Image (tube, rainbow, N blue to C red; front, side, top):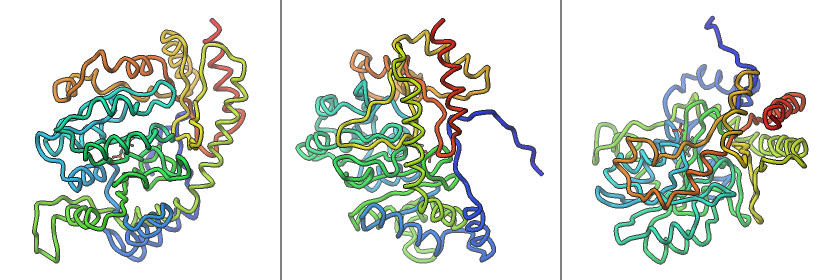
Length: 371
Ligand SMILES: *Cc1c(COP(=O)(O)O)cnc(C)c1O
């Protein structure tokens, strides 16, 4: 047996059932170990749930983003607009192809790119815009799609945190030309490691499929330099079982979020997650914003001491030395990003979180907030 570390309350915890275990066991028993029928079925069902024609299963969300940038035809020297308030993968996929990430600022309530900032950052070199749907809430897509169309830029949705989220009755990942998902364990559905590229464009899907499998059109016949980004059937089996439960997971997380909201009503000094009108929030993160950055840091420390894990998502990429030198931005233009990064804190949330744990988390937080 491998000895497992236990931590009292994690910030995220995947919901895994015996049905999941049985699904994985079945794939292994059938010796479906690399990509085959299970992955094909997972792609079909994932595309179906988004009402899209094409889905391409990958090793992880970063690989899906890399394939999206390649399939969108982004070339060395091109510019790609992205937020700085994101996980490194959003910038990595741009740098993998020799293009330049251009950071834009975010909306202080949704933490998603501000459409006005996107429009301002577009230049003749802009080939694509990668919109991140932060923590389960979608960006304001209509004005972004409109700016992109006016300038002939391709929009890619980094929907890795937003399975099942909606905006004006449209689903995350299904609005732009290409959508990318991750099934990392902290997302609303998981395959451990895993990802998916989705699109309605048959040519983009075809290119992504070729690049995913060494540029092979048939065995040992390669027409381009590709990658090995295939998803194993073992993981696809888990994905199929998890997909069936996605709506339930989201419902349970919404209930947990409502309970936090109730516990925090009337509490001064902290703002609960904002939900855009005509949009749904699926709470991949449950992110609070404190009035005071100092209070946030003390609360995070105190919660850690009593066994509660929280995260600051995300320390801005533009403040990290490696990205400062490789990306295009002005510090003055990223003030909202910096301010939010100083004041946000994401609390534990998962479908099976106990109400008494939530009470303990808020009680511990308030002990520190009041001092
Ligand atoms: C999780 C995540 C990804 C992709 O992660 P993988 O671990 O490669 O699956 C990309 N972008 C954002 C914003 C994410 O949160």
